[in-house]
Length: 261
Image (tube, rainbow, N blue to C red; front, side, top):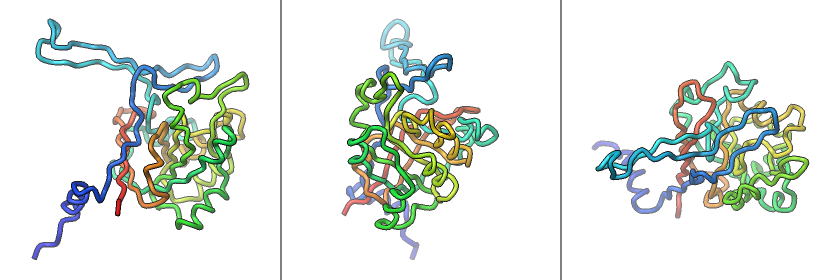
């Protein structure tokens, strides 16, 4: 007798609804928030769609567009080469395909982030998660649920900046280094505009999530949505960035597979 097919069983579970596909991707459009850097630093471009033809003289039977976008606009995947600490490491096209499918741990700190937009995840927060849910997944993602995706339709609320700079939650420098160097995860995923906290420019080192994780050959996922539909442990993430040769990152469609009873 042939052995039952694992892929056939997966398809059956998807068809029956026992496995739900959850879209973690923010829609990409002209109003998608983009990170704002102070002068004199260069800025990433907002997303722009340029129509080529739409069933007209430019193309009577087809509709299509060109688009312009920064690599780090919208829901996107950070490759190690994005940061100076990872300059000799992988570009986005070199990320192994097998690493684009991985388990997830979801750390829920919504209450803390609602009370303090500058809230920082510490090592003890992650260890408390492990005490309840088991070890962080080997070769998986640590996803931080802050509730920040609820702000994503307003760039002003999402970036949450004032005269002192942006105020958004993230990891402390100590936690960023620990996640990069002492845990088995392959990367960090967040709901905010970037993997670092809004005030990370003043940390030591500046932007420690970028510096430590990318410098360790790990990855980042940003501007995620719908993390509330995922369990603390057990979901599987499918992250599909554009394989831009020599690229530092790319917009990505990020999905989660969640088993339902």
